Picture 1: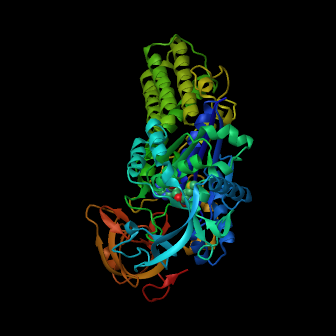
Picture 2: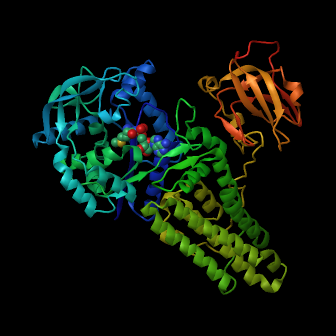
Picture 3: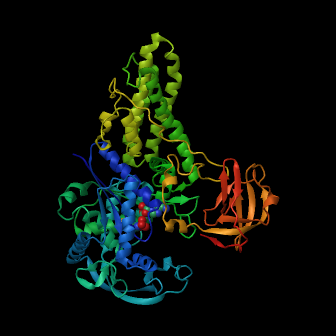
Length: 636
Ligand code: MSP
């Protein structure tokens, strides 16, 4: 039996799960589900990286000891993944005793073989960061975080003889073109390896950092966090001699983003070589998600959290968007507008429409039961089958090459071809002519078949949609038991089986001119109206009283006004209230403003906040304090 083992990076517990973590984890999940669909035996690992000074610092800021803090954030990651339908088989934490033992075992082995030595190191040390800097990392000779010059400091430490493996690694990468993918990252590693490779300092004196795994041969030191973290990929599956390790390690594929290419492309293979076990199969490197073309940043408030989006837009829409929008290896941009656009066009219009019209016609013309093929296939039918075969083929070829977007494009070509097929065949006309009954049966049956093929093909990307579609098509098979060659094959629906129309798969999202959020927030079934939020969540919203200093219409817009509001500082805000207030009504008036919304551009004008208003049918009234208060007063 074929095996497939996929890993995500283990995430630092100094930040909550965001869209970047979600992407790598979802892409790994898609690969894992795809290999299951091909009949592979799979194993999927994710987890958290919990040692090192970053974590100590974050814990201090949160006023907690490192372990309590790590427990909390690790718990957040662990709870997030099932909500994104991630089917990981194991969740590793680097504080697990089993992991600690494996790290110490490997350190001892490498030390015994002579590849770890003790030496003194002299370098530039920032007292604020409590770490050494290389010349290159400094900005104008100063620590970028503390803006002061580092001091020269000498420290004795343990070093891993990484340099010894430089020649071997170059040769390995050169003779295994698929080891680091896509090619640009393989080239990046090779170009790095053109310079002499230095040995790696793998210890930290305990007086400087106590939160780590003690070196087995000198407990005055703890292990450098990367030498500890990388080993998770084998400790989790029972290195050195556990059955899972023997079974899955030879087919290990690591998924990461470009930020951690060097530790994975250089430290990890040389560590493995020194420890004397075989290399993993491939390192797969993707680009970065940017937010409105910029870097995601906590201070700018542009961190996108998956669990904020999923209740609004739906999980499968979110998964689809991530996989469709990013070309694996390149950076991509996230915006809610782009997400809404994809939902409305690809999901609601194309897929949703195909599915609902097919089922509606099955119900109308055949009492809701799968009809037989009633006539010989003609050229149009052959063409449709050709599109379906092509989509299956492209999915099989592209996913292992990380061409997720190409796989989706080809599935959507098939969906669009199927919509056209129905338009051209015109079942509504065939139904008028009793002599065309056989043809009508074939057309509807083909439409049902193409829906089933599509459902199987999207299963790795959108498991719950696939499940819903198959169930309504009368296919009774758990999603994990689907097999591409059997279940995507044309003609495998069973004649006479009842199908079930159900509600729309992806309702359209309406966008208001005054804002980018959907008209009916969070949707569809009113989940949001019912969902309780914590006081912590509410307190994240910065609501302020302000006074309107200027107000004017925005040219060409019937709904928007540009306001300048004083909330202790002046803010430009765009408000969708022009049909209810004229600019003169507003100047001097007190309003209530959400002050920490991400900036947005409306009709070309930047908006840095949102004016609160009550909506009562067609009536809109801005919210204002009951008596005048100072501009900037906080509302809570
Ligand atoms: N703990 C290390 C990894 C150790 S693996 C042995 C670490 N953790 S991290 O929390 O910083 O996660 C980095 C990873 O998160 C990236 O490699 C990528 O998988 C994901 N991403 C974080 N931000 C991202 C984007 N903005 N865009 C895409 N992915 C990003 O590094």
